[in-house]
Length: 81
Image (cartoon, rainbow, N blue to C red):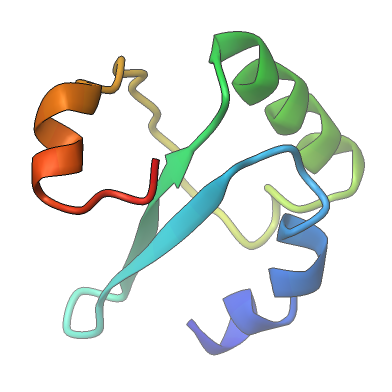
Protein backbone atom coordinates (compact mmCIF):
# COMPACT_ATOMS: atom_id res chain seq x y z
CA UNK A 1 0.00 0.00 0.00
CA UNK A 2 2.92 2.35 0.67
CA UNK A 3 4.04 1.92 -2.94
CA UNK A 4 0.50 2.65 -4.15
CA UNK A 5 0.40 5.98 -2.27
CA UNK A 6 3.00 7.31 -4.72
CA UNK A 7 0.57 6.88 -7.61
CA UNK A 8 -2.58 8.27 -5.99
CA UNK A 9 -2.31 11.69 -7.72
CA UNK A 10 -1.81 9.95 -11.08
CA UNK A 11 -4.74 7.61 -10.45
CA UNK A 12 -6.93 10.68 -9.96
CA UNK A 13 -6.06 11.76 -13.51
CA UNK A 14 -7.85 8.80 -15.08
CA UNK A 15 -11.53 9.19 -15.90
CA UNK A 16 -13.14 7.41 -12.96
CA UNK A 17 -15.93 8.59 -10.71
CA UNK A 18 -14.41 7.18 -7.48
CA UNK A 19 -12.35 4.33 -6.02
CA UNK A 20 -12.57 2.36 -2.79
CA UNK A 21 -9.16 0.97 -1.77
CA UNK A 22 -8.98 -2.60 -0.47
CA UNK A 23 -6.05 -4.21 1.33
CA UNK A 24 -5.13 -7.58 2.82
CA UNK A 25 -1.91 -6.84 4.70
CA UNK A 26 -1.30 -10.46 5.66
CA UNK A 27 -1.39 -11.63 2.03
CA UNK A 28 0.21 -8.47 0.60
CA UNK A 29 -2.70 -7.88 -1.74
CA UNK A 30 -4.25 -4.55 -2.64
CA UNK A 31 -7.19 -3.85 -4.86
CA UNK A 32 -10.10 -1.59 -5.32
CA UNK A 33 -13.64 -1.07 -6.39
CA UNK A 34 -13.71 1.51 -9.14
CA UNK A 35 -16.74 3.32 -10.47
CA UNK A 36 -16.60 4.50 -14.07
CA UNK A 37 -19.29 6.36 -16.00
CA UNK A 38 -19.51 3.50 -18.51
CA UNK A 39 -17.44 0.75 -20.14
CA UNK A 40 -15.96 3.16 -22.68
CA UNK A 41 -14.66 5.38 -19.85
CA UNK A 42 -13.15 2.28 -18.21
CA UNK A 43 -11.33 1.27 -21.40
CA UNK A 44 -10.01 4.79 -21.99
CA UNK A 45 -8.87 5.02 -18.38
CA UNK A 46 -7.02 1.70 -18.55
CA UNK A 47 -5.22 2.85 -21.70
CA UNK A 48 -4.35 6.19 -20.06
CA UNK A 49 -3.14 4.39 -16.91
CA UNK A 50 -0.87 2.12 -18.95
CA UNK A 51 0.48 5.11 -20.91
CA UNK A 52 1.31 6.91 -17.65
CA UNK A 53 3.05 3.82 -16.31
CA UNK A 54 0.53 3.24 -13.53
CA UNK A 55 0.00 -0.46 -14.06
CA UNK A 56 3.42 -2.12 -14.23
CA UNK A 57 5.62 -2.46 -12.23
CA UNK A 58 3.37 -1.64 -9.27
CA UNK A 59 0.84 -4.25 -10.26
CA UNK A 60 2.12 -7.79 -10.74
CA UNK A 61 -1.24 -9.38 -11.47
CA UNK A 62 -4.36 -7.59 -12.53
CA UNK A 63 -7.82 -8.94 -12.92
CA UNK A 64 -10.90 -7.02 -13.91
CA UNK A 65 -14.56 -7.72 -14.08
CA UNK A 66 -17.14 -5.26 -15.31
CA UNK A 67 -20.55 -5.02 -13.69
CA UNK A 68 -23.55 -2.82 -14.33
CA UNK A 69 -24.73 -0.80 -11.34
CA UNK A 70 -28.11 -1.67 -9.88
CA UNK A 71 -28.97 1.93 -9.03
CA UNK A 72 -32.23 1.16 -7.25
CA UNK A 73 -30.63 -1.17 -4.70
CA UNK A 74 -27.43 0.87 -4.45
CA UNK A 75 -29.36 4.02 -3.50
CA UNK A 76 -31.10 2.11 -0.69
CA UNK A 77 -27.64 1.51 0.80
CA UNK A 78 -26.54 5.14 0.29
CA UNK A 79 -24.16 4.54 -2.62
CA UNK A 80 -22.61 7.77 -3.93
CA UNK A 81 -24.37 7.60 -7.30
